[in-house]
Amino acid sequence: MERFDLARALVLEAGEALRNSSLREDEVGCKTGYQDLVTRWDRETEQFLRRGILAAFPGDAIVGEEYPADNPGTGGCTWYLDPIDGTTNFVSQHRNYAVSVGCWRGEEPLFGLVLDVERPALFWAKAGEGAWRDETPLGTSRRRAVPQLLLAAPGVPATFFQENPWRTGALRLAREVRGVRSLGSVALELCALAAGEADLFLAVRSCPWDHNAARIILREAGGALCTLEGEPLPLDRRTTVLAANAREVLEAVLGDYFPAERAGG
Ligand code: IPD
Ligand code: CA
Ligand code: CA
Image: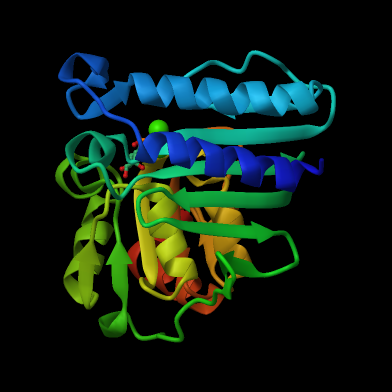
């Protein structure tokens, strides 16, 4: 089976299990603090995905949220797994969470899949072949002026409340856009841009497993992403992320709201 077909089958099976899951309070734990949750379903889902991938492609490398990379890989492909993106939503709402799987060959994107589990809707893209929600082709919005833009910001405390070098620009941007929305899932919020349902995205902390699948989908839908220094997103470490419905919007917002960071100041 091709990697994409395997990934699609695994993601759909994982989603089915999560839809039917139930969770007890004693199955919810904290990682770095009470705003950073993990459940037995995060761990079991990641193990399920890892087993399925490695059984078919034992030489591939896997970077997942819940387990350290256990295989440096010899096959040249790296998979980025977020078994549940939006764990807080999973725990508190049992909706608005995703299974996210991205596959890259070195720095070259291959495909990304983001399953909005409870909707259900599968966002997916193969590099060079457009972006899709199930069978529907996706495209970003045509809005260009800042007062028309809806800003998706998944990490409200980190971006707007806590001290950080980008806070002044982030607060001014939040005041000047049409509105700010926070769903609580990096992957689903980037897919909302791909679907034209949001226009801008800002996160001061995002990990490879959060965005390395959805960024492929957004690019294929016509969007653009970079760090708040204006650099290409690194694949392998935590980073800031600015994303927009179009390259020109990304450049304009970067220049107007985050110029010092861009100049290295
Ligand atoms: C989190 C979500 C959240 C974002 C955090 C992520 P998790 O992922 O995407 O929206 O603000 O930065 O860590 O922990 O639910 O997989
Ligand atoms: Ca995540
Ligand atoms: Ca997660």
